[in-house]
Image 1 (cartoon, helix red, strand yellow):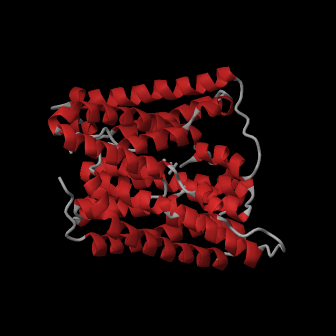
Image 2 (cartoon, rainbow, N blue to C red):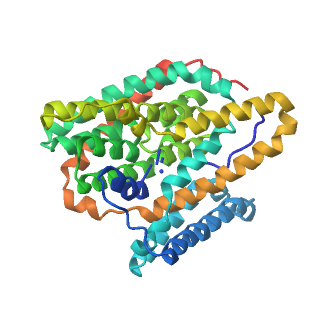
Length: 393
């Protein structure tokens, strides 16, 4: 497939994030989401578009402005960095003006992330997905299982409630906010626990976007190992995409495949949690056992869109040739860039730290220790499973 440079990064900061928190929180916990007056929704979308356009403008022109100067290193900053910074600055300003909560219905982070990831599939040759399936499934299974039980044990050691342990364990081991949302529905967690877990996910994911690509270079990891480490260890799909984009196109492709594989196991985890809490924690007589429809409900369906987009694009390129397909694939990449840019802005706009102060330090300690374990185990698995892996051209 033609080598078209992405402009970097997109589950859900989706698979999911703080916007997904309230939206899915309402869905899972059976409470209607207040969408707000139309003018506030439009206003929120306008803020996202304006800040996203400013972030794109800087990413395009700072390299030109600083070329040959003492600050030429500024030209190496990728657009996800500008987008997140603009989102955080917008968050602070709107909060000071008491406008952020009113405009928040227009911050459609989850939709933007998932759409960007589906478009990402159009730039990945399906041969890569097929070749990477075996190590990706092995890594996802081993990493999720080990990190989940380590986090669960740490939570019990620190005296956390079983439901909060389930949310933290799912978020760290699987895919961040999306996993926490699915777990919240499965174990009937409190809204406060979900909001708290989502905030932790975002706060820990933001520095990982920049830290992991840098560490991968420092450790001399291959493109495949770098992508596998990023995809398996950063807790949100959008942050994975951002970090993968910073690391390069090849690591981004592997990172997306690995993270999508973990996302696909989200439905299995949700069903298992439902069974465990129904029969071991809640012990409510007569509660219906999980069904196939419940599994489908929990399954992250954007993963199917990602795969379908890759298949269609691969067939198209093989039919008309890479040169003829380049303009169309390039358009898909440009659209992906815009959707992801807006998603990163929304992430910054939706970040909340107020819930962290209410929950105390113990969940933070558990999450931090579990994140370290996740990084170490993920690095070992990336080295073991992806050594010698060659990314198809």
